Image (cartoon, rainbow over all chains, first blue to last red; front, side):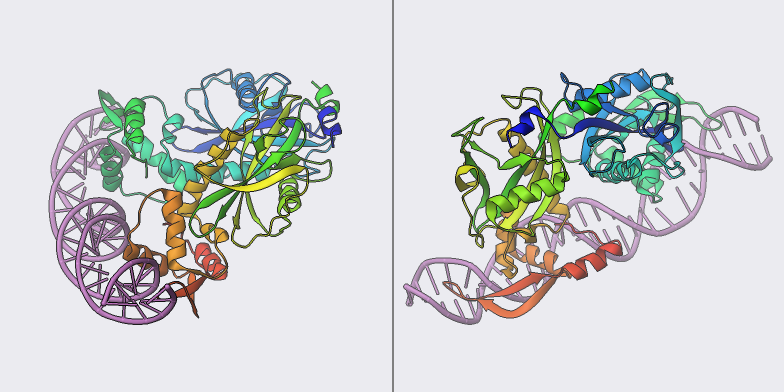
Length: 228
Length: 228
DNA sequence: ACAAAAGTGTTCCTTTTACACCCATGA
DNA sequence: TCATGGGTGTAAAAGGAACACTTTTGT
């Protein structure tokens, strides 16, 4: 039993399911693996936890190495440990999902990936390892969480229109929402700040809003809970 | 980098937060550690994941070794990886919570614990390692989950009264519930079977019910969602 | 006979749903 | 001038919250 201290039985990785939203589609960032194992296959970006870092730090590092962006919202969601999930040795992985505004990211597609690409979430290719399962678990978690916590804003630019926000929810929840009801509900929470700016599009301009995180935290501490 | 395959940097444990309900109080099962590290301190039961088992299997094994009971409901909730969380070596742990009916368990307080004891959840002693944090995370998860999934029944005997169920929810949610509203709501879900049996108590007898898991699964597959 | 828990309906209020027209703009 | 998306109110229905008395049984 004590031997476990000296001879750990498994390595540990952090794998990231990076969700992006471009205003129309939900996407996931995948890499084409440039080295064995599973070289040439598409997979979730991930990497080994190092001796001097926590899992959160490992996930953050993987993300920064891949995207060149820091301050990304990440959240751990589940750990995966099937015995043969890695073809070479025993590796357990801790799954994280990350939310970023994919319109705003200039990817650095370098690192140990031969290619880095956004895929629409219902058009993802066959994945290496058990990453299909991990992706599904992340998506299920995201669906649940987005309904009860204001994390959707992480997927939008700082300034967004109510239509942007509604589109996002419609895609995640996979149902159409009534525009008037949606607006009334989200505005009545009092966590959006209306800006004196309008986004000009092909037609009438749409008012921009931003998420008021301070106000949300204040309300939350008073028992308010986000619910869409 | 490749060395990671050969020399994992951390061991992996599964720690269990075992919740029990005795009809009146929510409790957690703790062990007094019989060996180093943290010998003599109270802690969550846990153990190393072995080479040939998954995390779920490790958690199940720990539980069976401790309680002598199998078929316990367990659920993974979070992984903890602070660098110095274990005093001897690098150990990350995957937290599980377990739900059992604590009136019905004859504990086998053997194993590598010198003592095994139920503690009321708001009267917990100082815990070793980072187990206080793990416990809190488990409790928070339980509160959220109990409101949206029918897992509370795992804490009750197979046959229970509506008052039992209400007491349980009142304790977990930390609020009083109106008896008539509670009954109407839970019965209207149609997932409880009324038995032709009555529990005799100090006063008038109370009708016993059981949870109809099949019916719940049927309803769930049709889009129904439990919500208390 | 009394104390203690079980059982039972109605009213009011809040929240959710369903639904349609006008407006401003760029092409 | 027309096509496109932005913005707005109301009525009906459903769901949630508040509330009190009677019954049964054991002591």
